[in-house]
Image (cartoon, each protein chain N blue to C red):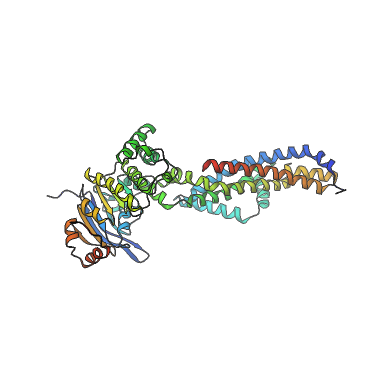
Amino acid sequence: MRAEPLLSIRGLSKIFGEVPVVDRVDLAVTAGEIVILVGPSGAGKSTLLRCVNRIEIPSEGEVLLDGTNMAGELRNGKLIPDPPTATARKRRRIGMVFQRFNLFAHLTALDNVAIGPRRVLGMNHVDAHALAAEQLARVRLSEHAMKRPAQLSGGQQQRVAIARAMAMRPVLMLFDEPTSALDPELVGEVLEVIRALAQDGMTMLVVTHEMQFAREVGTRVLFMDSGRILEDAAPIAFFATPEHPRAREFLRRIHTPVAA
Amino acid sequence: MPDFDWAVMWYAAPYMVQGAVVTLEISICALALGTLVGLVCGLLSVSDLAIPKAIVRGYVYFVRGTPALVQIFLVYFALPRIGFELSAFSSGVVALAFNSGGFISEIVRAGLQSIDVGQTEAALSIGMTNRQSILFILLPQSLRRITPPLTNEVITLVKSSSLLSVISITELTRSAQVIIAERFTPFELYAELAVYYLVIISVLAWFSEYVEKKLA
C-alpha cells in the first residue's frame, strides 16, 4: 500500500527563451522522504526546485502539495489562476534555503527568523520572538541572536536561514545547494542541521554536490541532466551501480570517493 | 574694491533674512509633500499594479521633460482655471512638490531595484506578498542608498525655489531683487544672495551626512 504523495509534480517544464531547462518532469514525493537531486550544473535541478514554490513560474505542468494545486483552483475542470495573495499563502507551507543564504541584511538573526511569523502569520511580537528564539536554539545559534548577518560566518548565516524557513512550520523543505557557497570547514555544521531535520521526519528536496551526505541522509537520489530525471534510485544502489550512462559519467567526473 | 557698497548689504540683511525664512518654509513644505508623493510613486513603480505604474511613468516623463519654470507657471495659472484657487505660496509649494516628487520617485525606484533579488526571493519564500516584501525588506535596506541622491534632490529643490520669484512670492531671491530695484546695487546683493544660499545648502549637506552615518 502506497501513501498519497505529499508532493506531486506532473509534466513540469520551464522554458527560458526556447531552451527547456526543466523538461517534462514527473515526480511524486511521499511524506518523510529525503530526495536528493544531483547532476551536472545546468541540469535544471535548481530551476525544478524553484518551480515547486513558484519563485520561478513553470512554463507547463503542475505542482500539487497535499493535493492542492500551487498554481490555482480547479473549477469545472478549468484552472483558475491564483491571485498573488493566494500564491503567497500556499508558499508558507514550503520552506526554502538558498545557496547564497539571502538573510535579510537589515535585521538581526532573531528578527530574520521572527519576521515571517510576525508579518505573514500575524503573531504578536512576543510570541514571534519566542518562536524565533526556539528555532535559533535548534540550530545552536542562541548566543548570536542579536547579530546582523554581516557579523556571522557563512555557516552561521545558513543555519539562521534554515531556522527562518522552519519558523513557518513548513510541510516541505527545499534546499538549493545549501553548502555550495561555504568555505569547506563550514559545510559540516550546516549538513549536521539538515541531517537533524531529516531525522525529525521533515520531507525535503535537496540539491547538493555533497555525495557523502546524499548517500547517508538521502532516502532517494534523482539524477538530472538536460532538464530530465534520468535516474531515480535508492542512494546505495545509485552510488554503487548507476544505470544511466550519463550518471556513471557524472559520478566518474566528480570523483568524490564515497565510503561504502 | 573701491566701489563695493558694504552699507547696502547691511541694509538688505533683515529683508533677506525674511526672504530666507520664506524660502525655508516653502522648501520644507514642498519637500514633505514631494517626498510623500515620490515615495508612493516609487513604491508603485516597483509594484505589480499595471495601471498605477503607467500613471507614474507618465508623471515622471512629464516632470523630467519640462522645465521647472514652465511647471511653476502651469500650476500658478492653470490650477485656478480648473477650479483650484490657491495662494501664490501654496501654488509655489505644489509646483515644487510636483517637480521634486517625480525625481524622488525615480530615486526611490532605483534604490529599491538596487537591492539584491535574493532578498525578494527569500521574502516570497516565507510567504510574504510582493507588497510586504517591498515594505518590510526592500524599503528599509534601500534607505541608506537613497540618502545621497535624495540630498541632491533637496538641494535642487531649495535652489529651484528661487524660480518662485516669478510668481511674486517674496522668497530669498525676490527679497534681494526688491532691494536691487530700490538701490541699483546688483553686484553686492547677488553676492550676498549667493552667501545665503551657500549657508542654507551647507547646513543641508552636513545634516544629510549625519543621517547617512546614522543609517549605517
